[in-house]
Length: 173
Image (cartoon, rainbow, N blue to C red; front, side, top):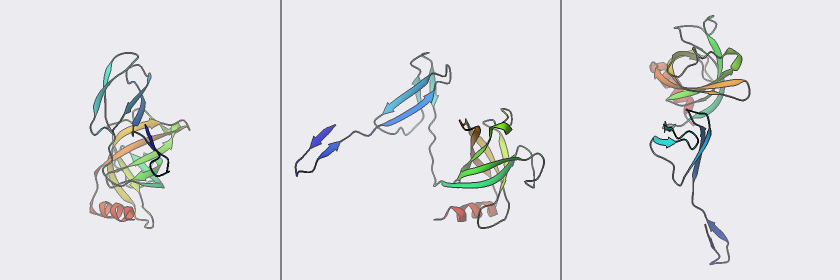
């Protein structure tokens, strides 16, 4: 860190750093890594407790993401209506052209149902329209919250021309 007062204005030069915190996938030990630059690619790390290595995969967003609070239904099965008894309920908390995040009540969580890699059928409508959109997505992350909820990161797999246009229109500034 440098300090300068050339023109009477005080300034401090700092070196930007990024801090990543997570738990070791082998022993659950809290791990923190500090870097001077944001990593561009996935990289290997070693746990300071168990000395086992693991791959850190970076969650890189490539498109604009809009925060929302929109009710939706999702299912492992091909359903046509949110009222289908096989549908589970959640809330879309953000959306991009590539995917979304869904938050739901932990009381409805199932390790077999809400599992990374599973393909879900998603039913939702985007304001101001009431048209029901039907989109297929893959669960890419599941995070258990401290507030008796869980959140799933979803990557869109397939959607027709109508959902694509509706999502694009909804995301316009």
